[in-house]
Length: 396
Image (cartoon, rainbow, N blue to C red; front, top):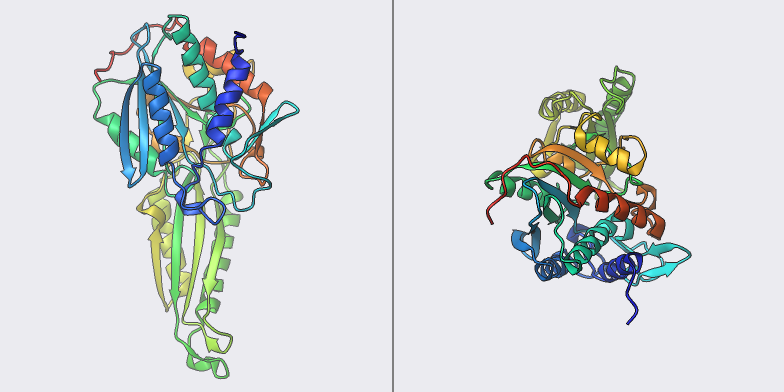
């Protein structure tokens, strides 16, 4: 019998995971069907049980559970790796997004880079250590979360609540995202505003008899663009830059001969380090209300929450450990991640993983096998025995 290499096994695992449709249910369509993360969560839970983990399946929404798998190590340190289970939609994909293609040193398919490759790396490492009769160094809490791509990080916030009730501490937490194996120590937070402008309908031949909600909304959008310009010309507290503001969706009008009585739009505000997102919400609400006066304006915070920027000192032990293992330097990201939900649940937090974000969300998603191999090398060094004991072993 020919023994499978680590690279071959990681490839096989990733190909299998790509074949499990885990499109976020808010982005489903004819090609994905009524998808969600349940099948993938079930697969992951069963695989972790087979590898000797104590597994908790935590329902976040109907048919959308988080998975928490605890692997006992040989030290008293507990570390955590969070991998989101959902992928973006597939309606724009070329070929079959769930039929992985391995070609010319790359693996193609939905979720290959964002971000099932990290699970392939970690699971292969755990399989190898189990076959060798060894333990990893730290205790490992491997977490699969739902709802990262869209929906307000519901899985991450539920994991945050769950971990706060456990009688142990996490020293290091890695949030898996494609970072080209560079440890990311910061990215901006987020605030979403759903704005509805209420006007008055009238016949389009006599617009003076109504209040055109689209026209009112255009004044508000112009005011928000001015606010964006003010922000980017301001002083940034960190290399992450300033906050930004953009209007990305707008709907209004019911017919070409009716003055519209309603117009709705979405504005997204990126939160820089040092900004309080709820204070930002109040300021923007005032700006919107004044720009639309005297008309009625409804303003809602998307998902009912906003997040501060994620920022870890680049000199922290986890960031420096990963940078040294990868022989690279710490980095910042332009996108968001589950790290926004995690606050201080761990002593150190990093966003880290193989592949580039530039390869994600596209009609053809792919990852270099060499990047997966590099991540495997780094994780092997990071997780194998030798880490100092600092935390209490959890009771599961």
